[in-house]
Length: 269
Image (cartoon, rainbow, N blue to C red; front, side, top):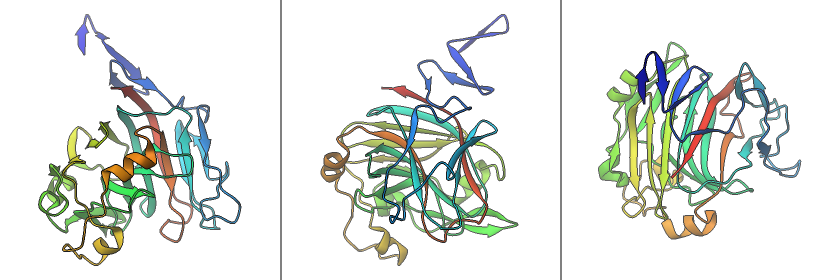
């Protein structure tokens, strides 16, 4: 991007943020045109309605009702190799996520957006694609906000190329404000990298990734077998799918709280 006589060239002004050339907005900030709610029967804990997902103040609000159901809002567009950028903000106590290559029934690769105690933002979970998880840093509560602490070495334990530590996270994250997340996803393996506010959070290569299942990670059983199977993930997703934002079902959601997403833009690679 260049600045010539006070004018930015090769960039698009989106909600006050200059996005790199080639990015296309997939959320207009006013409506949910181009998006749809995942269809589930009313008895399913992922059954949701337009009371759960709505636009307010230029952002998609993910809002859990007292029934504690979850839900997914999926993009109509399907994407394989891409860079995705958006701004995120959550009330402390909300359990959300950003899904990549998501199927219509909610299976995909999830970039965690769990802004609550023992949560994590920016690392990976396999929603319906193996339950593998990387959570080398987790949050503890301090003054109503999350502060990261170290749990394990993600490069050694999960086979990540890179994983930020708690000190790096705490220096980067802006509590109670909008934070910009960027996600790059390429290849059949795939290779996924995340950044927040321009700081790299994690980088994985599916040919070397070896994260444990959620049940083993919860009890810190680092000697358990890896739950990552890239061929299975590729078979489920077909290497292409929707972008989605999540309301996690159950009691891990602050009553009346919202997870919010705005200035959502994507560039095909």
